Length: 308
Image 1 (tube, rainbow, N blue to C red):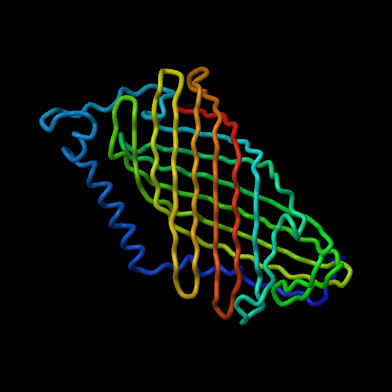
Image 2: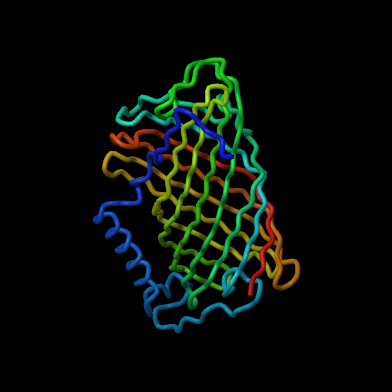
């Protein structure tokens, strides 16, 4: 038999409509991507590669395990990440009417959240790359409330035990074009699209109250990345992606930053250490889905990389 909850309601998360960005903004992104692709036309980037205008550009010699020439790479990462969550789920039609909560202090979420990340890279031609990465963060906790809380269309009272959970999933697709490429250094820029799915549940079992909000949408970013092959066995890579946006009563930003050193143990295997920081912030003042969510994830990384 399925359990029965009284006073239960379900709404979308406040940032659901961020997937509908203005047309002029999308056009600007496509113009940016076209400019990057143009830089790869014959004669456009040779001077940056260290060649004179009349020289013939010679791409770096392909070598398995070299991040500048790898055609395909799979990376599996483990991180004992530290997460911080701020959320406010407003009643329908009442922007800023909810209670701002700290997931760690008020809801009992653990501050340390060991997690994994999977990344796949595919190189198209000599200068173009597509990177796909996936991150899932599942958090839950229970805590005794110290004050009354407005959580969506529910009111949880002080001294009641609240049980809550936050499930965050994101899959990113990023295209970059190397506007500078030498035998040991590569620098590229491009655009990314991140598919985000979030589900938040808050309940008080003693009073059979429950509120759940969920959403799925897409958010774009502008990307910059660099790779430095220090030697035949050591390499350094770094990247950053960020973009703020505002549309139809919604504001938001998404940033994802990463840096690592890797050691080529034996072709085609490499191991490495790094550090990553991700921050997502969304707020809505619309009538139907008002609220706010801020999530940051940061910590060191250990990873294994296989490339061909």
